[in-house]
Image 1 (spheres, rainbow, N blue to C red):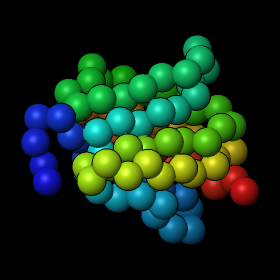
Image 2: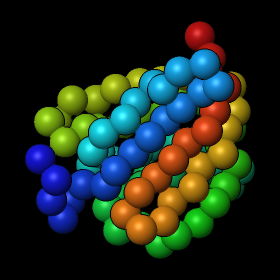
Image 3: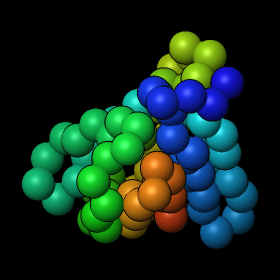
Amino acid sequence: MVDNKTFTLKIVTVSKPLFEGEAVELHAKGTDGQMVILAHHTPFITRVEKSTLRVLDDQGEMHEYPIISGILEVANNKAVVLCSAGE
């Protein structure tokens, strides 16, 4: 279900994609602290710190992905996290 409240999200590591689909929220820890990405967010690029990425998908399910570090880019109602997966 793609609508005004969702954005396209990809979370990928060197070895495999962790999440690809529509999301309502992405919770991540950036260099300046905790952030929440929503649909139509202002474009930016930032480093993501060691943490657990939390994704609320378009079906209302929360997914969690531990990461060691990464880069987050947000633009044109899309977000991409390139990261090293944690445990």
